[in-house]
Amino acid sequence: MSRRNWGYVQPYLTKLRSWINGMGRHENHEIWEFANQDLKSISELLGDKKYFLGDDISTVDCVLFGHLTQFMYINIGFPQMEFMSRECKNVISLVERIKVFILNL
Image: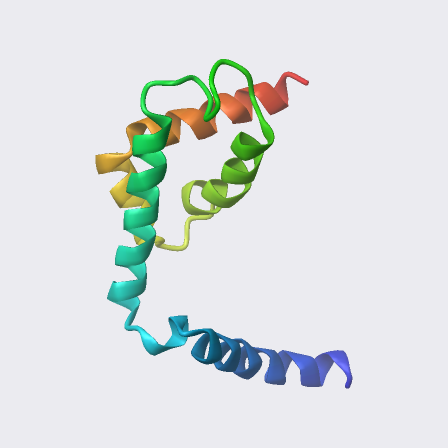
């Protein structure tokens, strides 16, 4: 299959895969609510700790950073950023701390 054809087929395959795994059967507002619940859980588990597992950065922090930066730094209207700004300020602080840590390596 050529790259050009892949560009036409890929969106349909993604929708099919989402339907098969169950997420594609939900409305967008339901999916956003699932994401908000996950973010709230992360916030509660993080609490007032510097990093997820304490005072030192860990693999868990790096994984969270990789996922959460998409909401925070890719400005395409993710509703999760608004939720994080209201409900999960500690998670935003975590991402900012890790960003500074990476920049100072």
